[in-house]
Structures are given as C-alpha cells and as structure tokens.
Image 1 (tube, rainbow, N blue to C red):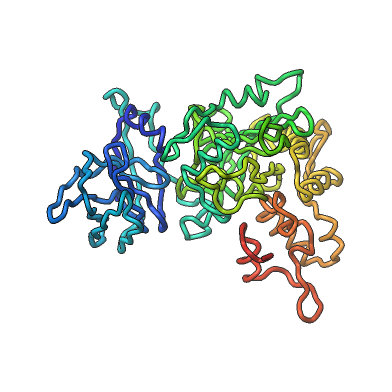
Image 2 (cartoon, rainbow, N blue to C red; image 1 turned 180 degrees about the vertical axis):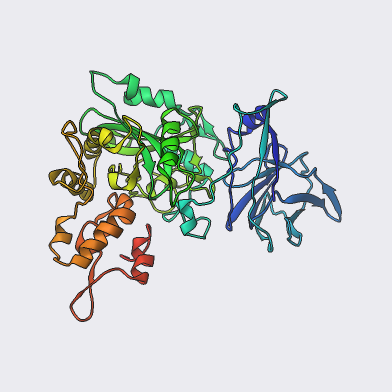
Length: 498
C-alpha cells in the first residue's frame, strides 16, 4: 500500500503538462501504462495489474542496472512511473509489485507489450504532503482528503466499466479531438496539448457570465446530482437563440455519504461548491457554428478545464481513474457519431454527435440555505432547460422538457415561482399502456436511473417511448426488462438493438 507520496509542486507542475493530478483511489484491473525514462520514454509497459508503484529495473544482456526506487509517480493516462537516468542499451525490464512474483519483460523497440503481474492488490493513497520551492505546504493551503468509501462507481466492479461503456480514449486521442474542435493548435507525440485555450478564453469566446452581450442573461443552478456521480455542481448556461448556446458545470466534491446523506452533509457540499471549494474540474459545452468545421453546421463541443483554468484532456469523475475526452463525455451525452475511440491519427471528425442533458430536478439534492433550496431555483432551472432546447436537442428531449412543464406534479412552491418541474411526469406512451406496473416502473426506475442519459441517445435507446423498453412476450402480453435486457440494452453502450 502507498502510505505517503512526497512530491515537489514545482516538479509536479512541470509534469502536469503531460500528467493529470494523481487519482486518490486509482484501483484498476485493466491496462496500466508505465513509462521508464528520465522525463522521457525509453520504454512503455502496459501491465495488466493493480500495482502499487512497481519496482522497475532494466537489464543489459546478462547484467542488471537498477534504478532508484521508488520512482517518481506521475500518472500518464492511468498510472505511470518515471525513472532515470536513461539506459538506451536496456533489453529487458524486471517488473515487481507487492505480493507478486517479479516478471522479466523483454523490450521490443520502446514497448514491453502487455505484462501480467498476478497476486497484487489495488493501490491506496492514505496521505500526501507537498512542498513549494522547498517549503512544506500545510493546512489550510494544502490538505489531504481521503476518497469516500461509498461512490456511485461501486455498483460495477470492473475498473473501466463505469463512464467507459461506449469506449476508452487515450491522451493522444483526446488531444486530436481538441485539435479537431479548435481547442488546441497541435499535439505532441504523447498527446501533449500545444497552445490550448484556457477557461477564461472559452468564456470570452462563447460570451457567458461576465462576458455576455446585449443584456442576455446567464442562468445558474447549484445542487448535488445524487443518482450518478454524487458531485456538487454549479451550472451556468446562456443562449443567444438556436445554434448559439453554451453551458458549463463546475464539479465539486459531493456529500460524504452517497447512499444516505444528511441534509447537513448536503448543505456543506453545496455551500462549498458555491464558494468554489473542493473543485474537481469544470466541464464546458457549446453548440454553435465553428467556421470551417462540420460543414459550417452547429455542433456540440466538449472541453474540460482544471481548477486553475488549464485545458485538461481528462478528468477522474468516477473515482476509478482519469478518462479522456470525448469518450468520458459521450457516455452520457449522446455521441451519435462516436465509434468507441477517437482516432489518434487525426482522421476524427469534430462532431461526435453529443447533446446537452436536461436538468432533471427529481434526481438532484438541494441545500436548505436561502436561495439554494429547490423552489428557489425552479425558475432558473426552467430557463436552463429552455437553453437545452436551443442546442440541437434529441427527439426525446424535445418531448420531455415541454412535458415537464405542461402538467402539475406533487411538488408545491410559493406563487412567486412561475415554473415548477413536474417530477411525477409520465410520458404519453407509458400512460397509454394503462398498465399500473409499467407506469410505476417508469416513475421509480426509468425516470430515476435511466432517463438522465438515455434521453440524449438515439431513438432506439429512448426509454421515454414505451415500445423501446417493453417488449411483447410469447403469450401476447407486455414484458418489462429482465436481466438479459438490462445487460444488453439498459447499460449504456450495450448491443441489445444490434
């Protein structure tokens, strides 16, 4: 187990151009990329393992030449190790992890291929310290927060089966995507972002917040999205009409107890977010015409910005590891044109077929503080949803959002609130079934656990249409989804519809 990680912020900043912040709970059982070099790339190891800082030695023919251990930890793509000095004559590497028998891996060019190290356990970071210019950083400037014990991704045990159902992108692929949408000038050989835009430049370009023009308002809402990522979120959105809409959500740490948060816990998380504490990353989207791209037709762009405003190729939103754009976005935001991985050769298209997501109040937790309560934000969320309708919505979104506001549900707000979303809304096709069990299934299962993402998908995955979910059984009666259906279809990116 990793008990303590020491690093210099000055050195860390140099590496952060290629490596993102260390995931605090990066348990994995799939590919772990390791780089052996002196801030370079002599050899790349893809070790199918859950390693805790593997001990790495390089060999030249019959003699071993060991590097210092532990090596500097810097997660490139997932979990990576930088060792030095360079050893260009090396022909093999000896890899070892805790509780694992060392494995000798021959070097072929700059790659070891895939190496399996058995008998290891997931890494756990229990403490960190940091220095700046040789001086230790202590609380409140630098504090270590252990990862929560209960996170949404715990529902699936496979490391890359959460926020990765539609595919996994690489650092290079992410840079190529950013290049395709005009967010970077070019890419380095390992996916380094060359001349990227920053958060301030993006806000100015889309004219949001303090950069808005012509008195057009920016709408806001703050809450916890309790049913998926358990993040405290601060949303902003602005629309200058069809084909000219932008939005950004800044994600902060959510409630400490995902399954049973107290109101006090919710209040703390939301207030921290509103006061810009515990920021993870800001995810921005815009829907507009970018000259020379997508045949000059509007399309959705995805961008991730770090706490310092720097453009990032990835974010660790599920507690598993860094996952790269655009795959980490289209897993929920549609991705009609996404084919499992953005091409690393520059042949990918800027338009991956993404969509904004509606603001589904029934899946949120709200603070009890004045101005942050649910009823206090209903009108702002109504306008946020109208902006979704200005950003190339799917057919499901075009039906759902007006449906939410055309009828009255069980939530009651003061008369000063003009638009209250009906959290009990049932789509017409489900109502027409006349089946109380089916209607209950939509209300309690589909609306709470599926609709958030499926409403942004193609028609075959539109679960607001009764016929896409309920299939006739052999005796002519309707059949609700079972295990096989759930595995093939309900899980995003499944193949139940061929």
